[in-house]
Each structure stands twice: as C-alpha cells, then as structure tokens.
Picture 1 (cartoon, rainbow, N blue to C red):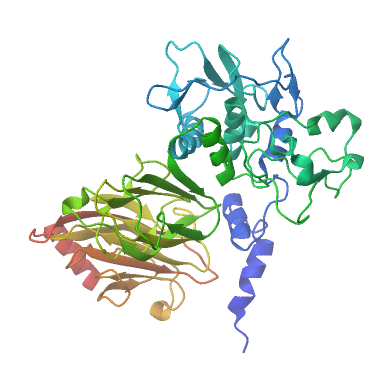
Picture 2: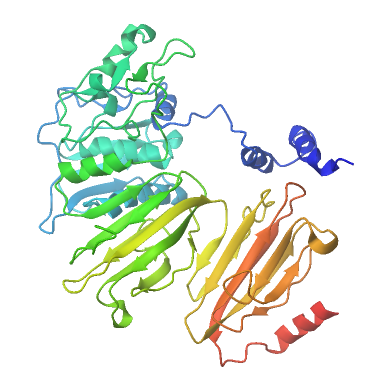
Length: 515
C-alpha cells in the first residue's frame, strides 16, 4: 500500500493558509520546499530602484546623488585618507532614528569591509569629513568623498546588507560595474528596451579599472533587466555567455574586495569566499607556506550555515601555538565567538559548523620554521553547530516555531582536556511515534555517532541532565518530511572531570525520567 505520508505534505502546503497555519510558518515551509516569493526582487539594484520610487533626491543611474554645481561623473581626488598605520579611515554618523536591529545590520555590512580590506569605519568626533547615514527617501549615496559631512540614505526599504555595501562602495569612489570604461567588451546594452529618459543610466564612465577583470558578480552590477520597458526583455546581456548570472543581493564579491584593496593600496592578505561551496588552501600549498604571514579568509555562503572540513593540516608546532597557528571564528570578524582556538602541529580538526552563513579563518606564521600548511573544503549546511566555548545556549532550527523538514543536524560540543560537558535541555517537543522512527534526538558520549548513546527519544517530555564522561558530546537531530513540532532548547556548561555534577536536583530529574 502507498504510504499516505507522501501525500500529506503537499495537502498541508496547499491548505496551510486556509487551515490557519501562521503566515511565517507557512512561508518558511514554502521556502523549505523550494518555493520562493516572487514579489521581492533578488538583486541589489532592483531593490534599490523599488525603494527609490517617488524619491525627490536628485540622482543619476538610480542611486548616485548629485551635488549641486558638481560634475555628475567626476571623482578625481575623492578617495578617503589613510592613517599612519596604513588604514583608510571613514568617519561616520549614525542616525538616532535607527533601532538596534538596523544599527547592527549596518555595522555588520561595515564589518565585512573591515575584515578583508584596510578600510575602517569610525564614529565621527571632530573629523572634517564624514558619512552621515540617515533614513531619508530611499537608498542613495554620493560617489567618493567630496568634503564635509556628506549624507547617505539607507531608508526602510534598504535594510539589506548587499544594498548597504553597494551604497558604501559608491562613497568609497566606485561606479556601477556596467558603467566601466571597458564594459562594451563584456556586455551588450539592449537600448531598444530602454526608454529614452533612462538611457543616461547606461552611460560609460571614465573609470580607472585598476587592471582588474570585469565582474558580473559585483554588488555594483545592475540586474540584467534594469530599466527595461518591455516585460521579459533584458537590457544587459553578457557577451561571452548570455546565460551567466548578473546582479545579486548577498554583498561584496571577491573582485569588489580586490578593487578596494588595489585602489587604496591596502597591505592586507585576505580573501572573500562567497559561494555555496569551495576550497581554502594556505599559500603555496602543498609546498611550504611563507614566513611572517597574516592572512584571513572570510567564508560567506548565500544562506544557511557554513560547514568546514580539513583535508590536510600541517602547521609548525610550538607550545600553546605561539609561533604559527590557525584560528577560526563563528562570524565575520576577530571579535566573533571562537569556533577553533589557536591550533598548530598535525592536529586532527573535527568538522566545524558555524551558527550563521559567516565563518572567518585566520592564519599566522612567524619568521622561522614553516610547514606545508592546510587544505580545507567548505559547504552550506542547513543546521548544526560546533561549540568550543565554556557555555552556550542553542536550539533546533526555527525554535520556538516548528523545525524544518528533512533535517540531519549535528551539534558537536568539545571541552578542553580534563573537562566534561553538562547539557540541560529545558524544552523538548518532537513528533511522537513508535520507536521514534520519524523524528528524534540522539545524544552521544563522544564526538561521533559511534560513541556510546546517552539519550534517544521523541515526543514531548522532560529530559534529564546529560553529562559526558570525556571532553566531547554530540547531538544528532533527525526529522522527516511531515508533522513538525517546536524542537528543543538547550544549554551546556563545562566542568572539571573531577567535579561531582549530579546534585540532588539532577538526581530527582533522573529518577522522574526513569519512572
């Protein structure tokens, strides 16, 4: 007999709104099934144009503000100043009208510049020149530094990291990619689909291309149908491969970073890895890496979380890894939580999973002995995590709303040698079934599913405190394609192995579980 469970998800998807399923849950379920909303543009420039409809600001090319009495395209000597330590200093003023979430988003967009370039954004004090970031009428910026306190608008419809970085890049002096002086070598502008009043947005600029190639992935590139007056017709068509994707919303591209570093002569070893998967290798691998290296790789997948796996690792060994080392952060900067602290030698590094779509790898070598370095691959994960901090709170994906379909999530907790892990699951609700054959959570006393099993269950219940016998613990969450619940909420702390962890309260909890 055909399993009726195959048909129920489709029925739920079709009837969800009618049955009163919360809208955010229903939309998330659609996305999990690969169904995307079509009303929201998925590239930076289309969203900018949408936000700028009705704006009274005098602009060219859709979002570049024009200063009265100034040439529309001239940007000679309009770069920002460098300090004595080689950093480019861009003072900024943040509007008091932004709430904490919006301030955090703008700062996160700035942070990526700071991680992989020598540009530094500093709160304005007495500096003569600064960017005044306000929520005005749309998304726009002046090109380059023109002197004094210059406004930049990041309005309500502009709250997207890619849009913010697009406008900041204008302020640093960059034109739209399709306006480069050599653009006709790479794209064809289909003027027959552009209204006469919009043709000026496709004017070629007298740009310095810095000897770098044309970038279809640039955050500064128009969408392929920008300003099209005919539905279904593109205005920008790549010459080498008309099907190549142009226009995106995720943020700076690798070449955007290279252009900033070359324009401002940044002495920095950095790379941005913005794709769903890829490879990270140390310089010269598999030959010896150079001495006196200080490099970072920022992995920014388009969505979900980053999973990093080392295929080879050989870094000069030293006490406490004071000489050469690798260090990995759960975020876009060195102030983010540490996923892997200083590591060297020929260490076996477990798979690392970030909590977001950002992961930063730092590699440092001194002036003495070197080794072959490392090679690692990264991919996109839907869920999971790798935790090394002394304590942390974490949840199943989507909590306290329902978790997603078809999950296989691994949460790997590692404490220093001589310590154990004390795990508290304060809320637990998974689909219930005989033998937990559909959805379940398993907890292992070690770093792999081959380790001894501490817990395996489903349904809704109180979960006893779990304590590892060594310095690692693994949680594995599995879900099928139907009947999702809210999942779990957990926290852990690390304790010395010698400490008596099970106090009377824990014991009562364990006895309640056993009865």
